[in-house]
Amino acid sequence: MSTKSSPTPRTPARKLGVAVVGLGSLTHSHILPALRKTKHCRLAALVSGSAAGLKTVAAKHGIPAANCYSYDDFDRLAEQPDVDFVFIVLPNSQHAEFTLRAARAGKHVLCEKPMATSVAECRAMIAGCQKAGVQLAIAYRCQFEPHHREAIRLVREKVYGEIKFIEASFGFRIGDPKQWRLRKDLAGGGALMDVGIYVIQAARYLTGEEPNWLFATEVKTDAEKFREVDETLCWQMKFPGGVIASCSTNYVVDGIDRCWVGAEHGWFELNPAFNYNRIAGRTSEGKMRLPQTDHFVPQLDDFAQCIREGRPSIVSGEEGLKDMKVVAAIYQSIGRGKPVTLR
Ligand code: NAD
Image (cartoon, rainbow, N blue to C red; front, side, top):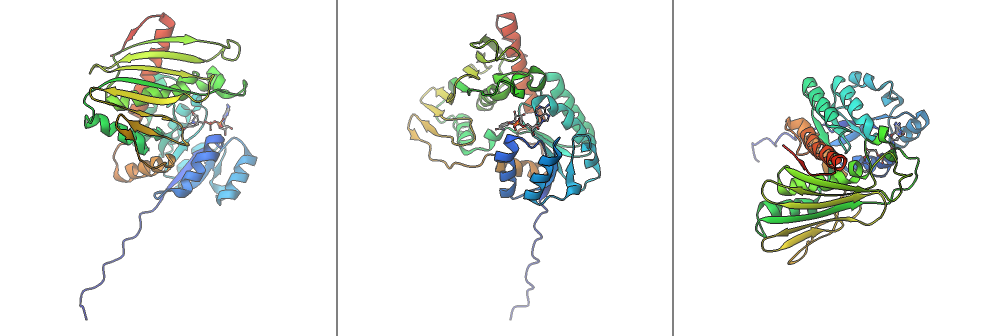
């Protein structure tokens, strides 16, 4: 008989508790379902302005009434040890306020895109989280998706040589004219802030650089519906390494969702590229054979691991700030009617 004692079983790491802030369509359709599938996270608390909505969702997900908060109650999260991080899924204009309140409550923050509505807000969010010693990440789900990871690998390993040109567009036909996305005070901007941000992100993570020049133009086909926010934008960006990106976004037509990259000896594209239902990729050699995944699951699990290991996320607040600087430069270029140089 062996005298060796059997190894002590390892206690599985505690799943990190998440407070979801905002019970709108993204929370219902993707975030709550994804939380059930994560390895390192669990739904621990809910925050909403609707008492009835809180009651229904809490009952469905087994969240006790003590872990349900109104927006006014939110700061009591400081006394809730069950919650490690908050996931902010509110209209864009509320991202900064709730990030800062969460940081003051000692909670790490995962914040939906766009990070905020201005560069100043992004800077304040980063400073507030640093001061509180909590992590801040922006929910750029594509960076956790296999086709996007493969696109980044193709560039970094120069599989087709140096890349030269990116053509990327993302837009959709927006419905209800009364929704918050069409109000400047709540959305900060229009199609650019909402979905054009994916195009900016992709051009930045593919090149691994910040654009140093851009020129943008705007068209409105429905001046009444889009009186407060942008509707259709086209812009070109130059990167220090020589890559040119030709980009567009809009709120008027469904189905524009692609990212094409031309390199010295070949090309690749993601088409569709940015939606959360299906991504497809091909290269000048043929189809990319990669799985369809739930983007929200690895995004949540990665943030939990970053918190546990004390390492910054690949989609940290700094990433959100860099995108917002590009957004601001695009609006500046439109306002001035000429190109803008970025530093
Ligand atoms: P939504 O309108 O469906 O939900 C917004 C939530 O905020 C609702 O619960 C609403 O009650 C609440 N809210 C609080 N104050 C409000 C106010 N003054 N006006 C309107 N609603 C208010 O929006 P959504 O589609 O769930 O988007 C929420 C956030 O998630 C946005 O920042 C959006 O950009 C982001 N988003 C990200 C993705 C992604 O793929 N990562 C997809 C969709 C939305």
